[in-house]
Length: 124
Image 1 (cartoon, helix red, strand yellow):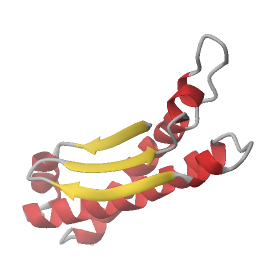
Image 2 (spheres, rainbow, N blue to C red):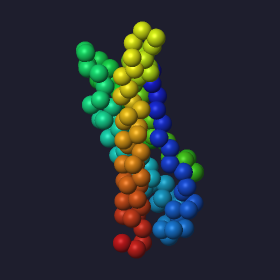
Image 3 (cartoon, rainbow, N blue to C red):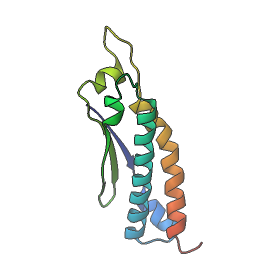
C-alpha cells in the first residue's frame, strides 16, 4: 500500500492577511484540500500502469480531516503490490504514479486554496 498525505499549514497568517474568521479559513482550506486530493487521485489513476487496471482502479480518497491548525487530505493506492510498482524492486524498475501525482497536485493546492480564501474574504 502506498499512502500519501498533502498538508496545509500557516492558518494564522492567512487569518490576519485576509481578515477572516478561523472557521472560514479552515473551511476554505478543507474545501481546497478536498478538490485537490480528488484531482491528485485522478492524476494518479491516469499515470498508473494499466496492465490489468486493478491498481489504477484501487486508488482511493480518504475523507479530509480538519484540525485546529492542520488540514489533512489522503489518497491511497490500496493494492498490496502498489509500493513495489511505485518504488521498484531489485528485479524491476520503479514506475512511479503516486509521487508524480502529489508533485502535480502541490501547486494546484496552493492555487485552489488562494481562490477559496478569496471567495471567503470580506474584500471581494
